[in-house]
Image (cartoon, rainbow, N blue to C red):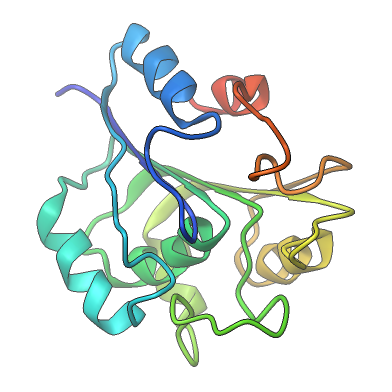
Length: 178
């Protein structure tokens, strides 16, 4: 069975921006079936209505790799909690599990079943920055790491891509994915 990777953009994002196309191409060259879906409702639509669409729209199995950026990374927590399989890897880039700032965060659940999340992913990474302009920082990564284990990687690199932070490649992610 071919491994697959699903890359989730963040709030207001799309599949064509930042490092998403680059990572998709790199994984495709390595034999992955890659999906970089566009969810215009990411972090605008309540997680309770977005989640069923995502679960129905993708294939998840023991060879699936999930990558999420910002709001897409926060969404991965709900997705992992509600999967009925254990995926190979999840990488949460600039992720968070609590409100990182004063903005509304419909992508977050009120509470998480941390044991269920952990049971549905073999290997989990949290990649956060010491100086994230939106509060999706190393402290957010640490909070998830303390509940889920895995590996926390802390960089000093903003939001890992934004409207004012060009980030066309992300070599670290390519190295982390089996």
